[in-house]
Length: 89
Image (cartoon, rainbow, N blue to C red; front, side):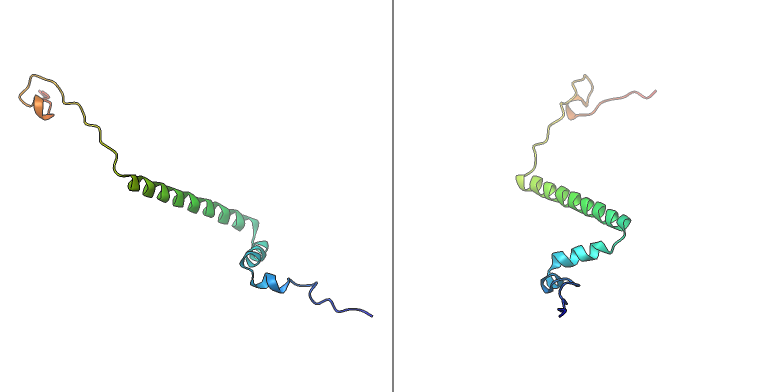
């Protein structure tokens, strides 16, 4: 007597509804260069998300204090106002 093994030829019923198994099954049918492109795009997406989160973390910490430029010391009329006189001819 031969037994009918209908479950042995196809995926298990759990795998038909599982999103991980469905994703892996779809990846088996994709060309290797398309899969490589997809992996690179995913890596770029993760780098962009990391940069976004790093920027949000810096904004949450508050602004960093600015350094003030030293005022030039000179003998001109505008020496105390951060201006410099340049003779052009």
